[in-house]
Image 1 (cartoon, rainbow, N blue to C red):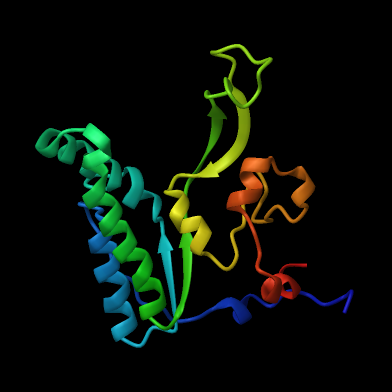
Image 2 (cartoon, one colour):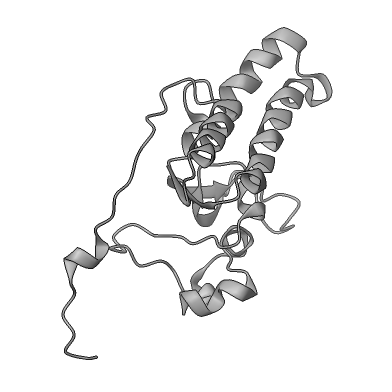
Length: 182
């Protein structure tokens, strides 16, 4: 009711954690997820999966190491990192529990305006808003993708009209979850 006072005891629960140290490779995250699932975790919260992208030993570093090893021709340096990331994403379905993936966000700019907007001059960036520090493949796999903007005090953006077109691709809620996020 309107006069109902919050009861902090309702939000207490037992949990276990796994401290994942570098290197933050896709396969180490996959192993950690499957380990937690094997311990019968019903919910796994990963805070933060952004390290898999740009952390020590993560996707971007792996691509740089591969460039030194195999060269950059035809994107050869991204074959192994992409394959490992795909294995990680496939593990989400194998773990058979709820996954909550947290990502850091950065305010992004699109510097490739030329071609999209014939009137734009090269070097004039277009702001695309706060975006997750992660590969886009993760966001496509999610059932719900929400953004907590700075100073939002834990309230996610519910009004999609405030999102840029790029953000709308990343932040979504599948139809069957919409009643949970009114």
